[in-house]
Amino acid sequence: MKVTTERLSVNTHGAGDLRDITGSLQEALAKTGLQEGQLTVFVVGSTAALAMFEFEDGLIRDMQDLYERLAPRTKHYAHDDTWDDANGFSHVRAALQGQNVTIPFQAGKLLLGTWQQVVLAEFDNRQRQREIVLSFIGA
Amino acid sequence: MKVTTERLSVNTHGAGDLRDITGSLQEALAKTGLQEGQLTVFVVGSTAALAMFEFEDGLIRDMQDLYERLAPRTKHYAHDDTWDDANGFSHVRAALQGQNVTIPFQAGKLLLGTWQQVVLAEFDNRQRQREIVLSFIGA
Amino acid sequence: MKVTTERLSVNTHGAGDLRDITGSLQEALAKTGLQEGQLTVFVVGSTAALAMFEFEDGLIRDMQDLYERLAPRTKHYAHDDTWDDANGFSHVRAALQGQNVTIPFQAGKLLLGTWQQVVLAEFDNRQRQREIVLSFIGA
Image 1 (cartoon, helix red, strand yellow):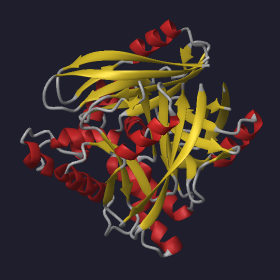
Image 2: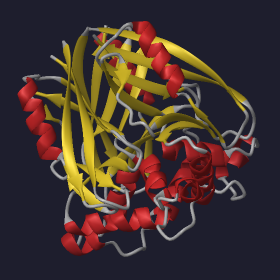
Image 3: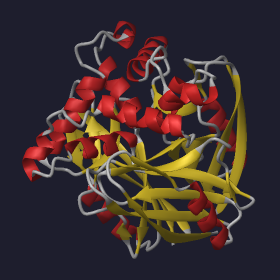
């Protein structure tokens, strides 16, 4: 049994930018040499989140539409009065979607379904360099 | 310390079928012989999710109603144009609810509350055989 | 590698009481002496949840407003007919927000962003003493 911590850096284009990071996670797992265990993916920061869904153009738009309906960009947020950076909607969406996922692996492969991708959801209203922590525990 | 990976198969009846899997999780934990650690429950696929709530008829209906309000079945989803399988609502609900939960255990028991069950949420528009991965890490 | 399980008790004031528990988590981590690994935070019970967001007054109100919009307190819930304790809204909010988060740590520090706090969300309609399980795995 061992634990090892890696980092993944992703440049995003601002609110609504959804990025499939599944390939990078599988590559990082291969480098650890671990065969069986769990990977926790954790995005650092308060205006991005992680989700799992089928990464295809239609569903990408559906997810963007969902976030817009649940926490509209045009709504007034009290947070905007605090900092005047107008990204209250980004914080609310990130908190609701969640910022960590834990995925089991076996035989050196993440046990994801064929149409189940791990997606970084950028909610901030500007481009960002996102740091994602990959914490592997296994044997 | 060791890691061990088990699988649970559940046949569901399609959208809105919520299944209490708590007993199966506790049984699987007992078989591992582990006393203290964490269980990660992970549902494979993109149209089912995992939630924790009090599994009683009233709340089951309330949760079904919540999902219907947040991602209505009758709404148009761009995903439906991609595959023509009309389950865009299923994907959106699954991504929002989340597909993994991690539960600590001690003295060989999951540290759940009395009214806190682990529930498989089937969102797809047809019956499915669901594969759930149980990843135990502990001693 | 070792696993260790700690508990945190928090007294809350009822629905809408959001508590920053980040400091307590970091203190508990320091006591374990672990340097690298994962902390799973798990709230026991079915009417409270855990979220991560910037803990400042504006955003606290925005999150309370989000929960009210997604699962209004004044709506009728079938759960209320079962138990007559009128907290159906509490259960629904808790199940949607989620009750566990897993956070990696390295060099003895939780790898949270500067404005990324771990928050206990009390949704019940009365004051409660909440038990939060902290499950550390690492080296």
